[in-house]
Image (cartoon, rainbow, N blue to C red; front, top):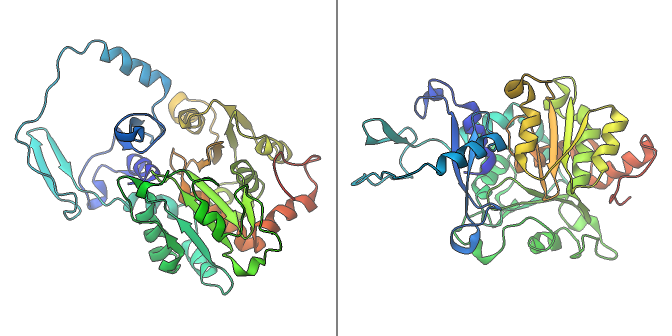
Length: 366
């Protein structure tokens, strides 16, 4: 499963399990992930905990957990446990002890429900079938590959040829699964870009895909590119923020009530948020800090900042439909904007013409 899919499952499980995959509301989730946390072979494997609302555990939780670890004097193991077939039909249960069992669930169901609560899939499918639109997605042999096939191909009808490196591999095929200009170099070339993100000289944009995207090993962070145009993560957040009226998940709820960025990200979002009179926060790096803001009302009886948009410098963008950064949500947001303005370059130049900010976004190329 991708990290955003795990968050969706934690948030959206119901008392009856939706009728397909067992009973019980999730109190949280232990996530084994290809993440930034060093550990395991090659130091590309980490363990983290997500709380009941789906967000990474906050400092109060992790500090309390650490104190508990200082009191451990023994631990127990399960002996002679049955082998578990992860390919078994959804709903299959394996009893481990009188009080614990493993249930096979559908990895896509809750996540697709979350995405469909945000987007008009019929409109996206219609736009994706239009002559002149094409895209390429690089799964980097990570967990996002099967989700790309399910969302982009099976749900939106894009051709299977749109996908590259979408078979998950334990070693990521020997590549580094980080969606940036260096490690997604093949995609970058396909989009008519040089290694620094600038366009090939004399590029004919009609010869390359209209949209390109890549995600990382656990399917949450993103790279977005247009034909001959690279969109920095800071600028993509600013674009989405300033065009929230085009996005059903925001427009249907009256618009954005809050946005946030990590401290190392550029101030592009700050400029747009100020112009649009949207509260803007700058946080330390770490999705748990965004989670605190998105869950302000639920967890702290504070102000409700949802609908909420957030992102960080490491190419992660997300909103409050789940509580992790979410590659496919970001990609679908961009497709919505492209469907309105015909291309990413047109979106950027459209912002320049409006002249509503008084100053240019930092790092944005007009």
